[in-house]
Length: 288
Image (cartoon, rainbow, N blue to C red; front, side, top):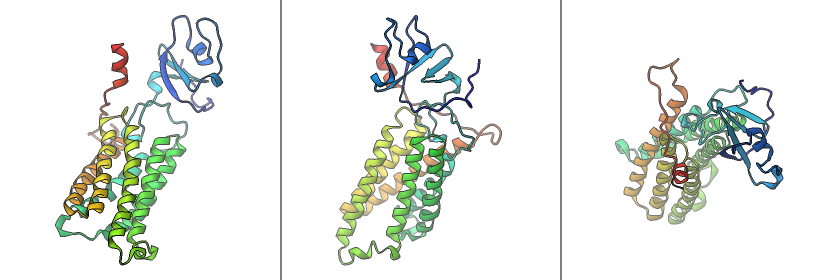
């Protein structure tokens, strides 16, 4: 019998997937009844256990078929197993990923000094309106569809591009505040970039159970931010060019995931099959 998704009341959960013990139904496990008949409440537990029974998975008062659960997929900015969205919104992730990709691509080529271009001001418009505003809107819609990771990532990087554009805009007076102190300006930008490296690194850790393509965005972006920070601290053009190369790779990884989120058998002959990262936790369980 299919589950009635529309009439279920959404409840916040931390997911821990486990099979219900023999003699205990999924409903009993969800309600905290053990095989010995002892009943526990959710207040006694730090997490809500997700119980499985045949083709169904139940947590709290919600019951789903296994096939209804959404797998990790970069095209929807979903880093792991989750219930299907309860709102009839289009997938906002491709917009955010595309905005991030194009802005990153252009700036990274300039960091590589492609065609001799070294002045990055052409990116300011992109950073304010596409990488900034459009990506921020996409992040807000990710929150609306219940995707915390996608909302945090896209909204944050939208904010990053807005902040970067502000640094490049004279009316904000940011660069002017360091007039006569170019070394201090470089160190300040380096600290700014280190902060974004730290943020990106922990987002990367949150994609270790996702797909190869999705993980690759944050892996290469972490390297890009780190190299850009080092380039500012050391005033090194070669390191900045290396950062540009990794930035271009990051942009293509983001575009790939955006394409994966849009392409389907109805609109394209070329679709993307997600390649899951190895489940290291599952292997360790099998060894025990």
